[in-house]
Length: 106
Image (cartoon, rainbow, N blue to C red; front, side, top):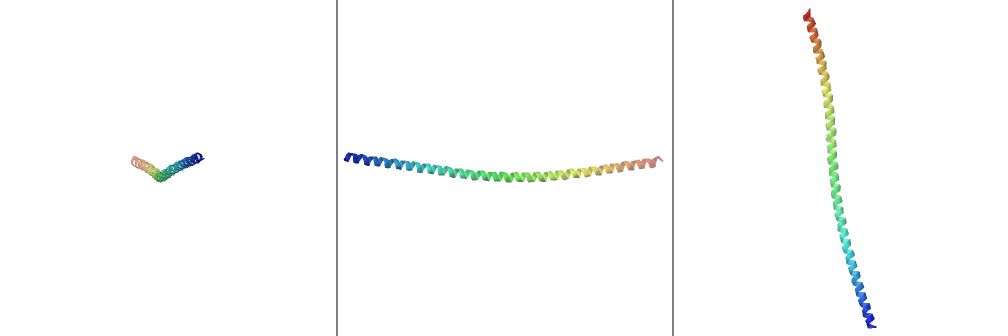
């Protein structure tokens, strides 16, 4: 009977050691998983910040593009007005030359 009791105690000791090892392994796995989660959270925060910075940069570029397009449109309109004025002046100049030619022809 004492041998059976001794074997039972050893089995309990072995079982206790196995449970402790499993607990240690689980705790270690939880710690590794927790660290990986924290690393992913940090990476996620960095990526979100980078996206915000890129969005801001794109917004600024779009604003500059709109302003540039507006200035280009105004410059084209001004050019057209000036071209019209040149045509009017050329017409007047041609008419004045014709009048002068007719006056001198008499």
